Figure 1 (cartoon, rainbow, N blue to C red):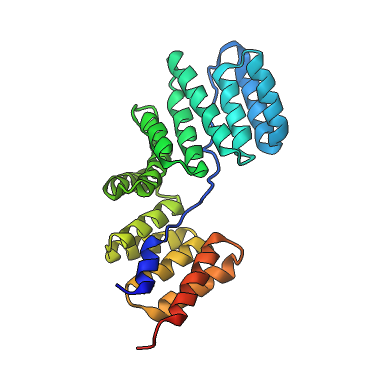
Figure 2: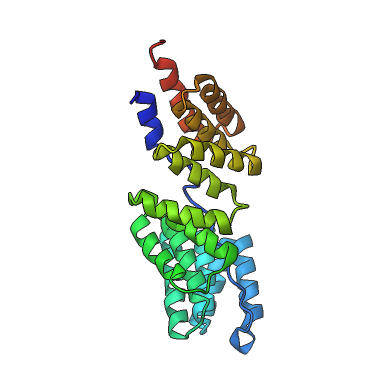
Length: 262
């Protein structure tokens, strides 16, 4: 194994700090709280500090798990991931006590925030809870499966991650990050035909994404295509010079250029 290929196997791609999943609607919320919930979420999104204060007041006044979820959104939009994860988990637990099916959505949001916080074990637990029922369907189930796949990769369970990514591709196939993650995992497990097919789909969906170009370069290098790797990594740097993807591309280019010429 060359030093360059060893570097590529260690690389992962995808967002480090994802945005929180969209909140489920509060339709059928009791006592007219649907409108109160909508106002809170709008404020938590547009002005997170003010949203935090509003959600806290609402929670004290008896807003229950609607207020806790809104507070989690306000924290997430401030990138306060631990606080967000705790509030989403609290909302999920309270919703379970009330036999409210929204609990699964809240667990998914908690898992997403745990990933951003850098705690894949707790992320997996939350996402297991989210996916344990049939409440999440379609795109929402696909995105939760994608998040659990990311957690499983970090925990070293690549077979479990592959199963979740296959599910995510069927349910959330319009998300380029799903295809990017699948391509990265396929490369890491040396399934290069699958890696090339999946990164081509990611490129079709997100042609100007530096992370996609980084992975195109990684797969080209793993396939022995030096010119393709160099071109893709250079494009990743051009597209988003201050990004983490560009930093990884520069490191790969530097190591590539330092390789002895054959």
